[in-house]
Amino acid sequence: MELGNCSRVKEFVFLGLTQNQELSLVLFLFLLLVYVTTLLGNLLIMVTVTCDSRLHTPMYFLLRNLSIADICFSSITAPKVLVDLLRQRKTISFNGCFAQMFFFHLIGGVDVFSLSLMALDRYVAISKPLHYVTIMNRGCCVGLIVASWVGGFVHSIVQISLLLPLPFCGPNVLDTFYCDVPQVLKLACTDIFMLELLMISNNGLLTTLWFLLLLVSYTVILLLLRSQAGEGRRKAISTCTAHLIYTLRNQEMKSAMRRLKGRLVPSDRV
Image (cartoon, rainbow, N blue to C red; front, side, top):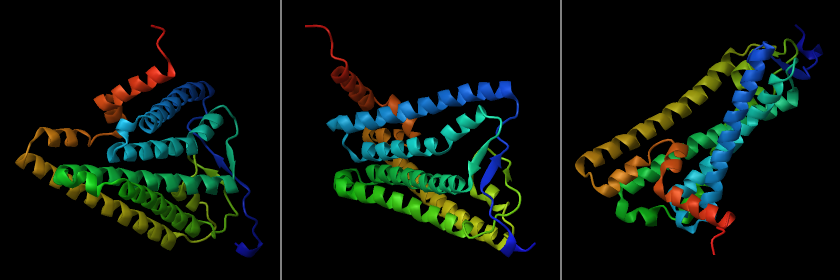
């Protein structure tokens, strides 16, 4: 194939989740419910933490950042998927596809780094409780959050920079419902073996490194809990759960939400 004479594809076609119209409607309603619930839950966390001064602590500061990232991450693909479920032909422009991949990996990287920061926060709270406030001060938290976004940006820009120069002049059908690097890479009109190996090595190294860091931190936490099972340490380890589940079950967050409701919906009692 003469790559110099080929014209770049202008759009990609998704095969989607299903071709059955009735099933598409059911999936649309279900995914819409999940998406709206995700948005409202994370938005509630953001507003509550922002408005209640009692929650202006490192843990809730990091939780708010993760909620922002979760809202962005859900909104990268979900609206397009919902629209495509109601359409017969599911397409996305070339530029739109690459933009979706860029933001998908950007926010995905931020999510990974943010979860690691929360693990670090709990590690400091459990291993150095007397110095926790000094170590995890506001400046440190802001710096860590900025670093997580910069890390996500670098990770994403590396992926897109490797993919963008490739020629796409042949097939344009993606057997999926959103744009991601592995699926789009297969459509390139050139040998991609070395590039695939490079991307797998890059992602694999990052994943392995973060997994080992988390494994070490939680191992230290468990050892500390076995040696000193104080009430404060028990409370700290209880926060090492999924952020949305923990936050909505946490007594401090529940009280803050009630206070926020009281300000937004004043009581009629005199």
